Structure formats: structure tokens, C-alpha cells
Image (cartoon, rainbow, N blue to C red):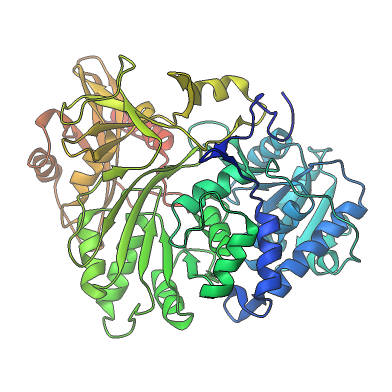
Length: 555
């Protein structure tokens, strides 16, 4: 397998509308900086970078890497909390025609070693607080040869690293030409196995993000037409990704905001704080807020209700969510505070962007897990045929058109996820759905998490959502545990709101009032916290282990 470019899977760069496109984020950002050099590109508390600063620092980083004699298309890992340096490092990698690699800052040493070796990382940009961890990794990953230290006031730069400020101030050298085939890696899937590196061509990713953007450019356009739009209409929107840049939802919305000439606003806190988010929205006049469903929206609703006069959110025209369930009741609560907002529930994954969306506003809210299909999306049943709307048949979602090249250095998993049907190539991340009579879909969840109990298939997310409609329930996780009688027994982990109490039978009865009785949990274990990841996603593998142990102890 080739290590770079459109030939990774023997593919040919795809076309849009019959025309070959040549988008590269680096090329676009350079052109925007020339058009609006003094506009703000990134804000982080009191810190800000103008477009001139942003591109100049990124080119300094790229020049430093060029001066180190690194091989063509080398990999640059970003081991950082949300900060301007993350986006500067990302852009710097692109300016050097290198490949940026996201890094989960919650990983332990063994997981980091696997990631950096799998990605063939040569450069690591890291926050000072991770110095000891990086030192331990360094001894085990000899291929990782260059280290860039971002000072966060927690430690001093070690002798084997170079300060970020020194790097971005490097003398400028000639940089390589940029290509639409230059790659971006997005590592994903660490909760269900070792992480996999999703390979996106710049051109494909730009086109996919542009297709779902609030500020869209000509589908068959180029940088010249994009710049003409920005020059005529002015800077783009101010977007606050409340989720980590190390995950796709945060990163992709941030780089898409920049691609539209907009402003990225980052939270200063390293742990999500709904009050900080509400304050930052008002202080920085944010237009678009990016969250991950209820894990972010529920705390925000509590903060708004606790101090209804303190935060207006008047600058916001849209909340965008992806990656976790966003319940109807929470959408309604947000719209009660600011009815002019639009709430966009986007259904996507690292391997498949733009599979569906659901839009709510003051005129009405959409039901939980109900989405309008995106372009190039099919729901295919077990017979290989498209599911008939209103048939109640369950099918797998398949996204065609602009999709990744595959997983880096993993042809087996690539073949499993990126499949051919009727002569076309599709991304099939494993999400299952029913198609309603009106053509919308009811999302059921990942097939890999499907519970088979007494011959019936149960998808955890719809049971979790039913549980969360109970007033006492803050969060829930549903898994299947091996059972001699049922095949799998449905076990729910439930986190209650502070000060609330409820018994198991009431919760089971509550679910039966919403769903078929066989979908209700057979047992409920009450937990202090569901313990979601910082991106709001559920660790089903951990909960399944804990539920199995709990069942054994209960016997």
C-alpha cells in the first residue's frame, strides 16, 4: 500500500459535477490571509491571531520542518488540548505537504506508542503538561524524531524538544507545492479497538465539509471564486467548537470555519464547563456553537435555567451537534431560551460525513434520532436492495461520493468499511436505520452494538433515549450481557440527576411505556457517572465489561 496520496488504494481523484476539483485547505487559507490579513482567525480567551499571524506562524512551522530534512509527506502528530497552536500546527503540516495526525490526549503511554507507530509519526507537537508522558513514549518510538514543545506554564521545555515559539519564527524557506491529494489523518475508534487512521484527501474533505456548511461555495469552484465571495460578503461566521479538536466533530468544524474565512473561538478550560461556554458565546459574539449532543446540551440547559438573565446567546444563529444523541426535550429547552436559533443535529462519522441531518427551530423540533438523508446516502437491507420507505425493515447506511481512501496501513479493515455496491464505492461505518414513509430515517445505532435478546434485535441508543426522558435520569448506557435464557440480557447503567431517586421497576416500566416491552432493560445498575469521553461519546466496551461483572456479583 502506498503511504500517501490518491494512489493509496489505487483510486483516481474523484470529480464533482463532471469537473476535476483541486481543493487544498492550505492553498485556501493562504488566499484568505491575503484577502483579509487583519481580520481575526482564532481567539482563545484574551489571545487572538489575525489571519496574517495564523498563516505566518504556520509557514514558519512548515519552514522549520523543511529545514530538518524530513522525508516527503511525513506525519505530524498533534498532542494538544484546544488552543491556537493546534490549528497553527495543523496548517503548518499542510503547508509542508505533510500529514497532520490527531492525538487523543487521554491516551496512556501504550496507546500513544501504538498510535505514533501506526501513523509513522516523525514530528510531535505537545503541550508542556504531557512532557513526562512524551519522555516515556520517546524511548519506545525511535521513528518519532522531532519534538515541538508548547508552553502552557506547567513545565520547562526539555533539551530534546524545540519551543513552539522558536519553531514558528524560523527563517522562511521554499515550501513544496500543495496538492488536492495531500492527506489528512483522523484517528478514530479507540473505544472499540485500537484506533484506525482514516485517510482523507484534502479535496474530498473540503468538498464534503463545504457541502454541509452554512456558508457554501460553488460546488465546482476554485480558490479564485471562493476569495471573490469572501471579498464581496466579508468574513465568515464565528464558530465555537466546544468539543476537543482532537476529535473529528471539533476539528472538522474548525477547519471548515477557517475555510470560509471565519473566526474560530476556543474555550480556555480543559474540561467542559457549560457556564464558561455560555459566557464565551456572549463575550466573543459567537454565531455557531458546535457540541456533541446531550452530554454538552444538558449542562448548558441547566446553566441557562440557573441564571436565565445572565446569558443571552443573542449572537447565535445555530447550534450544531454530531456524535451523540440530542434529545427533543433538550432542544425544546434551548429554544425556550433563544427561539431564533436553529438547532442542527448532523449525523456523521469520521469515515462518512453528511449522512443525514435534522433541523429544529422555534417553529418546531424534530423527534430524536429522526434525520433527513444526505446526498449520496442509501439504506440497504440484508438482501442488498434499498430499504422500502415505511416497510419497518432495518438496513445499513451507506455513503457514496466523496469518501475517505481507507484506513492507513489496514487493508482488511478498509475492505470491511469501504465497500462496493452496484459498481460504486461506499463508506459503511456500521450505522443501522429504518426508513420512514416520508423518506426520513430513524437512526438505531451501530450494528456492532446491537443486542440480540430472545431472538429480537434491540439497538441501545433508542433504549437510552427512552430512559433519559424520565425526569430523574441524567444519562444512561444500555448493553447486552450473555444470558443462557435470552441469548443476551439487556442491562442499563443509569446516572441520576443530583438529589433524585427512583427505583429500578419504575425505570423499566417507563421504558415499556415508550418502546416495545422486549426492549426494556431486564435490570438497572445505578452509577455515579456514565463516564463519557471528552467528545461526549459512550464507551460501550467498558460498560459491557462492568455490566457482566455486576451480573456475576449479583448472582
